Image 1 (cartoon, protein in one colour):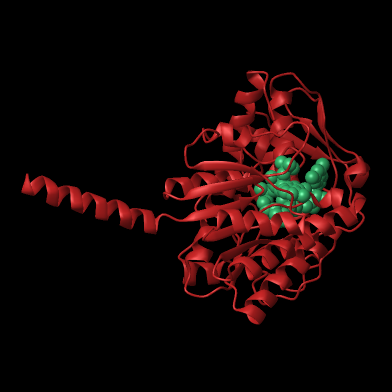
Image 2 (cartoon, rainbow, N blue to C red):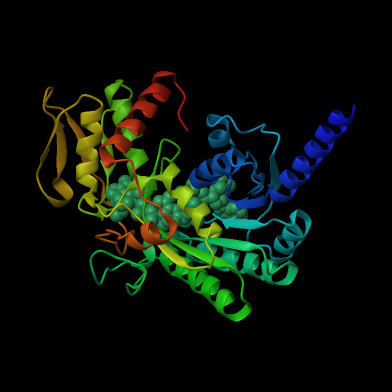
Length: 365
Ligand code: NDP
Ligand code: GDR
């Protein structure tokens, strides 16, 4: 009887410690690529996660569903729009999170030229709304801002690192730069733990189909399966530093576990052209392609059949382009122990295989 009571007491104490140690996180942009992977990571670590999504006529949780998280008992999906200051304060007040990951954004560079003001409101001022909520509700809440290599834009030095000067080339890049500096300003003005992750492009089978890597792997899969004839693209010469999204969300989490708030670059330190990625994706689907012609007349031809499988459509060009990105993640490695593991070849293969599977099943988001 005595032993039982001691064990019961010990169990209760253990549960109390567990409860104290169990953290609560708010993730904005939970329906996006990074939101899904970060939700998975934090749930695996025992967090209670509040995933914020905005109201639309048909909200889509397909990424959470793919990861099997949609009905996880510790995931609470809450409706929230980043552009609403009052709603930001109310949400933070209600949830009282230990950590906030601000992943919500109008994140498509191309669209930011068509909708610069919407992009500024969501991607720029939206971050300020959350920072204000942290300042007013509880300045001890740790805040992560999803900054981007697009802030480097017209690059001045190679590779880009935390101290490289910024020169954004799109309304999206400008809006993100505002949010980045506001995060630093709240860190310096109010002592808020505001971390800014300058993340280079990161991709995965959960990437949206409007972004070039997934557009390519999805189209290559369709061409392989006879569901599409030609893939139309814009600038094939653009060079990007592409990493694997699941690894990058781990970097976000590490930034919020550090002793001090800081700014970190996450990247692979390798850059390839869009053309290289196209070749790699076709190869992953068992198709060898040959590029012919130049500029607007460039095409890629299936070597086995002689059919044109890629052509240029100038409508995918941008008014101002970011030509070359390559990041140096040395600071993240030294201070956070973060390093990319997956090669671009592995990442591309993973995406092609996922898209072959989905398109074969007649289902692709
Ligand atoms: P996604 O485009 O996949 O996700 C963006 C998310 O923001 C979606 O959940 C979207 O919701 C949500 N959102 C958009 N507008 C609002 C709004 N007004 N209120 C609330 N939520 C909103 O982006 P990623 O997951 O790829 O990226 C995550 C973050 O990291 C973004 O901020 C992006 O700009 C940034 N980033 C991304 C990089 C990358 O390579 N992936 C690199 C560097 C930075 P809905 O589903 O309704 O559209
Ligand atoms: P990016 O990604 O603009 O780098 O922003 P995206 O995949 O859209 O473009 C990469 C490069 O490919 C060129 N490109 C095309 N792009 C698209 N989307 N569609 C095409 O048909 C096409 N053809 C060529 C683009 O011109 C560009 O040079 C992404 C987003 O996730 C941002 O939110 C994030 O901040 C940055 O990565 C880092």
